[in-house]
Image 1: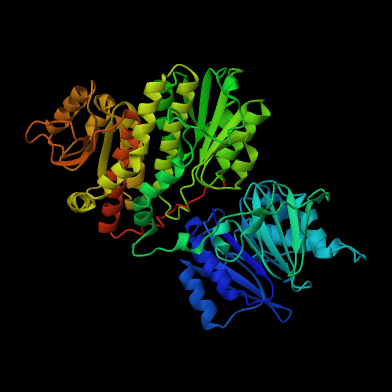
Image 2 (image 1 turned 180 degrees about the horizontal axis):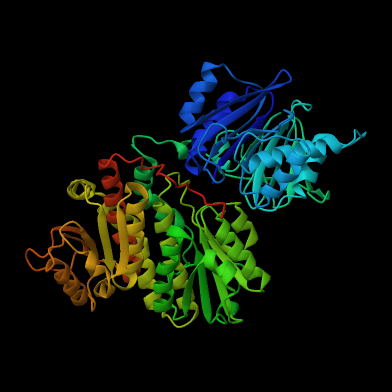
Length: 616
């Protein structure tokens, strides 16, 4: 949460900082601010609301400089006000900084500094760090060969408990920046006589493909010519420069109205990319180059634990159904935020798998570290190459879905579900799945992009249905077996972007409480597939209709319904069982999107939400 963008170099910083903030606005859009260093003074602008408000102020006051830091905020400590926006400046005016994370002991730090004569003008935890750096700077003697600025930041961080990604400027050190991280990402882009720093590499798309990922407990000092990294304990660190693919066109909205819409329609390509190069030569199984575990070791696994948060947790539930059905391995799914504190007993032959689109989700990262601390092998499914989770795990699978900007996840979720199906296939073939069954599975997976396209072609019909239901304030999403995770995901999507109260349940559980909500004012969306449970789902629909509830059904082509039982029907193609959750999810996404647009909601930036949850 929150976005950081900084620059030092030979060019003017303004255009880069503002453009970078626009790309990171999905991380927080309560307020935004920027500070330039120009002619021995800080030039600062801060505005509540969107980055556009800040940009207007910056241009109106002609602010610029060859060095600057900027921030877009998701509020944690303090109201959404200009005083609480970043950058925050020390009371002596020497330091200004931007911060992502939570300083847990800021109250103690603040109380101590007030006794030393430092003053505070905001409610933020960040201002306490700015003043703490100033305090250490005042105590730090001038020494030959030591950078007083760098040392003061490093010493201040020794007293900080919590998470942070920070970038700091000092009035006494023109042309120099100091950054640090602990639990909150910070990435440095290397240019020609210039450096970029951000909480997400998308901020410098088109500027640099050579990057350095800071690790927890590291502090970086750089000017336009060079940089060096140390730990907060003053140990030298050898920087590892990595190459990334960071194309400017990946962030172009094109002809779409919103990034969410764009990303829904990018799903055929995203799914194709998730499969590319990942089938065996005989097309009977999946293969993964980054698992870093031999098949004979995987055969010893007798339990898999999945951990994630939010939409990724729903992908874990899809994985549970897939792996238990096709690989016959018991699977459990935990909220990462619960697992990290629960001290759950794990069998010695348990494999832990975490799922995170950003690779930076703080609760998932903490769960990962807890599992590693106890000696378990941990895999990850993530979309972010070079992310903290990707670097911490023993092995894993990249989604290759491309950047996902919309806060409500779409293409990332379906690619996670696809990788879950491929993992089920891979584990099944290691165990007792036959060659012919594996070959049928692969053939079915390869048809998925085309089948998704077929569903997307029904967007006009789904739009018409959305217009009918946009003014309702309550919804139920109901499904059985592998459709239950999609019911949960559908309810979450609708809540996230349209602010309609929605709940997801297994269809049979409706009678155990939720049926009390059924009325003409509460529509129900059922996810129906053929087979042995179709008649059971049909009975659940009858129960809703008997209570005058409106019914929308997403069903496979082979499902037949009695006349007048369904108010609105959306068809998806008959397909292999492993593909059903993904295909059923597409109309759910479109319906939620169109309802939110019809209600006039800000689809890409829903209230109170941010894309990457990097604070507790």
